[in-house]
Length: 258
Image (cartoon, rainbow, N blue to C red; front, side, top):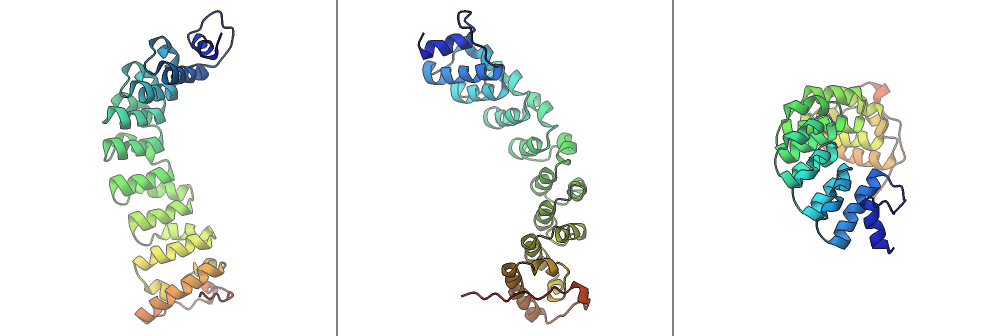
């Protein structure tokens, strides 16, 4: 038996072929055989394809080239395939898939953004459980501060998401996040917060002694950049704020640029 007929008989459960294979393997073999050998729909194999959500999505995309009603019951069982299928083939809200998608924060956010194109209240409880999804949802869908996102970001102590939320959503200082960002002890992150967030509000903060400077000073490159920026702020405002010596960073080696 040649390879092509071997695969075909394996997929269609020919009793003469005594080879064990998983449902997922059978499903993908059926998709590949239909695509490369049949070059179109292969009804005899579709029951095998429907054993796996990812294979069913691939069959709709590569073989059917559109909605495949017979496979939708399988596709909707996985949040990723349900979201992609709704986005690419239903091209609109898909209530059957939503029952799965709305419990998974990342896919729920993407479904709201790409399919609903707006807020999705039914999924907000799940979206609010993920710092990144909550931040993105607040920025793109709510277009403003969202208390659920802020509680989750602080709870999970994610300084990078905290920085992005302050920069893109609050567009200014966020004291709780500021403490978290400085506690990360990451010179690049603290520098980015100072330049992109603090400087968008009250520049007098940067003309004085800000405790985040202790962290920035640990990296000579970022410290040199920060000093240049701070010099401009100071000259523009001619203001000096604070006199707490404990907040002043230790000197670092001077860095010059050509």
